[in-house]
Length: 326
Image: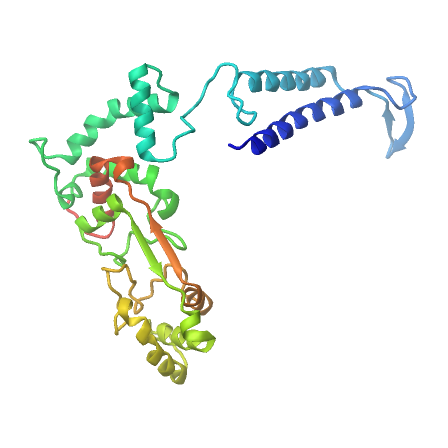
C-alpha cells in the first residue's frame, strides 16, 4: 500500500473514532439551562419533556467500545501500513502470485514462522490430502482414475461438489447454472467442448476467449443487419430483407462461428443457432456484443488446486450434464 493511501486510511479511521468521542462528550454536557430532572416546559399529547441526561450505562458502554477500538488498532493491523505492536498477520500480503505464495510458505516453514493462512493450508492438506488422493487415484495410487469413472462414485462426487462450491461457485453459481457472462455448466452448450478430458483441460489451464469488436468493420448498419441474421439463426422471427443483408456481412464472423453459425470449440466460438446466450439474447445485448466485442477469461486452477482436486471437480462438472451410474 502506498504512503498516501496508508495515511488516508489512518486519518479516516482515527478521525472517525475521535470525532465520535467528541460528540459523546458534547452530548454529555447540560446546555439546556435547566437543572437535570427538571421540566423543560414542553408538552405534546400529554407527554412532558424532562431534562434527563444520557443513561450512565449507555455512556460507559460507548466509551468502552471506543477504548477497545483504540487498543485493538494499536495491537493489530488496521491503520494503513502499521502492522500493530504484536506484528500479527492473517496472510503474507506481499505475494502477488501463486509461485510467490508457495515460495513464501516454503521460506516460512524453514524459519518455523508460518503465518496463520499458511498454517491453515498445511492443516487442511494434512487433514484432507489423503482423502483427495484416495478418491482421485486408482488402487495402485500411481494413476489417476478416469473422470467418467470418478463421476460414478457418489463419495467422490460429493467431495468434488464441495470443492466446486468453494472455488467455482463465485462465478458459476452454487448450482453451476452460471450467470450473465459465466457459462451454465449443467447444459450441453460447451464453448470448448464438454468431453471429460476437455473439461479438465479448461479447469487446469484456463481459457481466454476473445470476441473482437466489429463496429469499425461493419458500421452501425452492418451491426444491425448481422444482429438480425444471428437472431434469425436461433429461430427468432426477423425481417427477411435485413437478415439477407446480414447474411452477406456474416462472412467476417464465419471464420470462428462457421458458415452455418454452429460455432467452433477450437476457438471457443459459441453455437449461434441454439437459444443459449452467454451475455444475453436480447437484440440490444447481441448488438452490444457485435459492436464492442467480449473478453471471457477462465483462470487456470492447476497451481491453485493441484491435479487431484481438479480431477474431482472435473468429474463433478462432467456429471452435471451426463448420466452416470451410481
